[in-house]
Length: 106
View 1 (cartoon, one colour):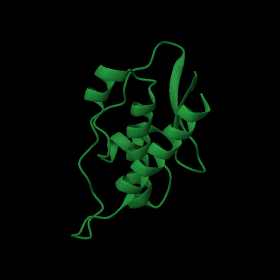
View 2 (tube, helix red, strand yellow):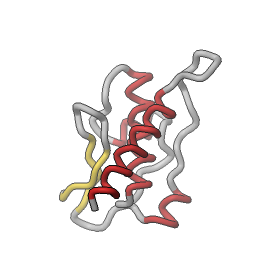
View 3 (tube, one colour):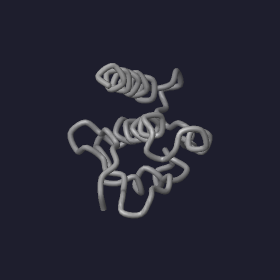
View 4 (cartoon, helix red, strand yellow):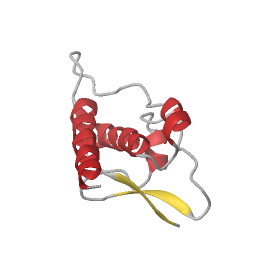
């Protein structure tokens, strides 16, 4: 369990670094993340989906200079195509200090 948690943190950090960097043209606008393929394989609460969503939040943060309050802002800004649907009673939340996306009860 500890190994899986550590691995997910390392992967999240690696995706953040990859997603937060600016391209060689100096533009930090990147195509909207599409988590559809990951959803098919892993599900809306998987580490892989949360990592993709966190990467989109970090790209938004890098470009806008602030952490978004919701994933709706990330979609509206073009960093995410859509928000994956969660089971009833759950929602995605964003840690206001680090930009990490997690699942919580509604």
